Image (cartoon, rainbow, N blue to C red; front, top):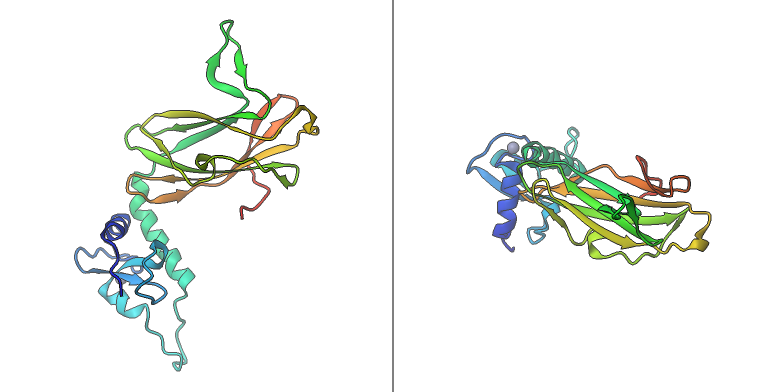
Amino acid sequence: MSPVPDRTRVKLFNWSARHCCFCGKPCTTNIEIHHIDGDHDNNVEDNLMPVCFDCHGELPRYNTEHPRGTRYREAEIKARREQIYELHTRPYLRQAGIKVSKFVAQARTPDGNPIERPLGDTSFTAQSHSTDLPICLRIHITPFQEETQLDAQLSDLYQGRDLWNLNPGQAVMGHFHLPITPESDPFRFRVEIHWSIVDVVEREHEMLPFSFVWSDSARDWWYDPRVIHTRN
Ligand SMILES: [Zn+2]
């Protein structure tokens, strides 16, 4: 039986503000960490939840011989835990905006025109709308042409492996390359963006996904509130 690492304990107690993640009551010191799958060596965050002494006794108990009562299912327990985490971390959540374009963000030629990037070279801007707390964004971009996913070799910042650190009000401009050539006609391109915002107590809030689609008439990327493909 390996103990839950201190760093993880601090995080989970922060996320729940020391409330029981099953019944929701405030616990102060009367709180323990429950292993949802019953394996006390499985200390991954998703298998853990802070609970009060009463719930810790109740959660694993289930007599299959007993004719009444319904066992708590793992999915139900985890969903309840997420509600409690959300309740106590939402005050730390700050919003951000994302934009995809073929123009160099905020740059102009000497005569005042926007600067176009070469075909396939795509501008990406992440902007924090926070006025006080820092946030991090996890961005996962998947490009398609029609129904076919493009092999775009995006860097870790666009594949959800590295986070975008944003201080209050900060905007970060980057770009990524898509395999688009003048022969790509018809230009039915779509980049689907799945993303989440990580708050100052390291809690990750999943946002709704959306897309940018290539507009032939505007010759630029346009916001589309839908995603067509499910992320694998
Ligand atoms: Zn409880």
